[in-house]
Structure formats: structure tokens, C-alpha cells
Picture 1 (tube, rainbow, N blue to C red):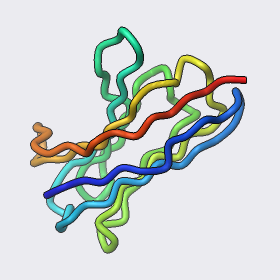
Picture 2 (picture 1 turned 180 degrees about the horizontal axis):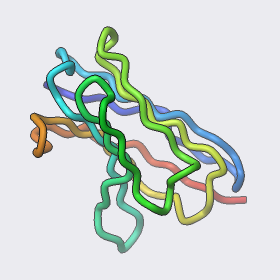
Picture 3 (picture 1 turned 90 degrees about the vertical axis):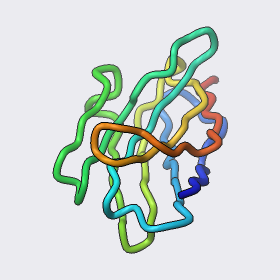
Length: 115
């Protein structure tokens, strides 16, 4: 499965962006996640969604501001990001795999939050 992430860009603090991750194949049997890596930082799991959306988890820094969702019919995962802060600036990657693993990754999309 190949993943194509899009939707990044430059946004002012307090603004919103919606990231999309389109898969080349069916994702219904895979857990999916969004990771991010800021300048000089480790890559971190930002949001996770399990099979059928039954399990959803967020990094504590984005809880209440970000929402992950999936549309298996479209083989697409979304990350709605609201109330963006400068510290959210990073390259965002989508990834997926069988539960417990991330076997395939997208190329990343840059999000920059700045006034």
C-alpha cells in the first residue's frame, strides 16, 4: 500500500488545516496514524485510529484540537487540525499497518504555523 499525504501549508496561529492521506489500496484491515516531526525533534505519534475507528488516541499536546477520522470506502484518513499553534509546525506523515505496527508510510506534508 502506498500513501499520499496532502493538505499542509502555511497558516496563522489559531487557524485550521485538514490533512488527507489517500491509500493506493484498501485500508479497512489496517490501523492508521498521523505522525509529525518538527525541526530538531523526534518523530511522534500525533493521532491514531484503529480498525473501523473503534480506537482513537491522541498525543496529549493535540487533544481537543485535532480530530482523526477514516473513510474506508475512499481509502482515506483525515486529520482535522484546529486552533493551530506555532509548536504544531512540523512535517506530518501518515502511516498504516496491521494492528500494533506501522508497515507503510506516506511522504509527508509540511505544516507551518506562523504569523
